[in-house]
Image (cartoon, rainbow, N blue to C red):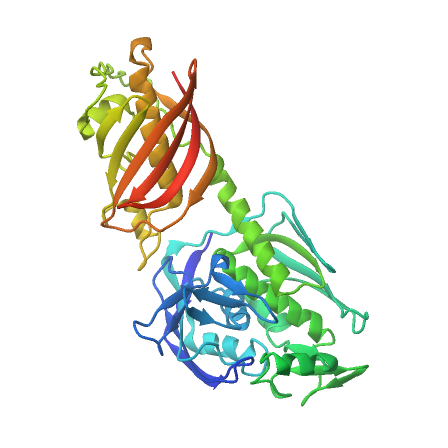
Length: 450
């Protein structure tokens, strides 16, 4: 596993946006480890940022658009392809307009900038995702299949609806092959599409200087084609840019037929779902580590009497739950009323996960809010079953999980749980997390005590 990389220094490029036609000045800046790729609008108050993540994709009409609130960045795929293709993990792309410069319609100029800046290894490990099981996607005439495999290979077929200029190309994607085989491929369109694109304001900055136009069997361009299969190679360039929105390098073999931005981004979403699957399935209630054989097993503390109504401080909570820092997600129980319990968690900037989630924009991971609900539910059932001597609650499943709003340092997380069903050692509960009066997450959890 190699190190993360960023640029040695800032680099700049000016030009026009392909779709907006706006004049734009772009700077690509070095960024700390685990920053990822981010766009920054320096023309707007506060210089707001939009992360290059598929969760922020709002439009895929002829290009990929990212947005956060009212802040939008159009046509991000070429600069993202260059950064990902050249092995840049962390960078800030500053823009004084809503779209990067189109340059010559390829990623060549962006690669030139990256080479001019040079790369530097960082004190953090790159974490590529190896595809664990095939992902298949069909949308109209588009078919994409991502298979497990070493490295990252794309095998792609492109053609228009009439079967013109059908092309196929396949290559392993590395920094060297990306620049040699894909980076120079220019964007293209068919002549009969131009009227629609103009009417919808999609090519205000377009010209034969930055795009290839196909008219019947003729190719309109200011220079000869750069590759025999330039059209399919540009489709592959777009794939590299759109899959950069996953946030991690991908290892697998992608077979794509007639891909486009909509399908590319949907594939990225399914990749993210596959990455998150182990986290969702992981047990969040774990027993304490088994002591080494030569070490004596400590005598467990006798649990205190369970209050029917009242509160528990953190010392009381730790007599019931085996969790300890940094995984104890409950600071205080405020009250217990029958099958209902209300607890709180003070979210401090000192929480260890804020170092990487996310640098500069700390947000409490949603899975830890789910963990808080599960811990509070397990605590309540352990207290209700005190006479049977149960000591540990094991998390079994979660359903109807929803995360509604971000939780940030300084927030107080109010955790409200109701035990809805118990049968023997199995319990089921519904829980919500709130900040103030606003619900930030909710879930139904099932667990077993023993």
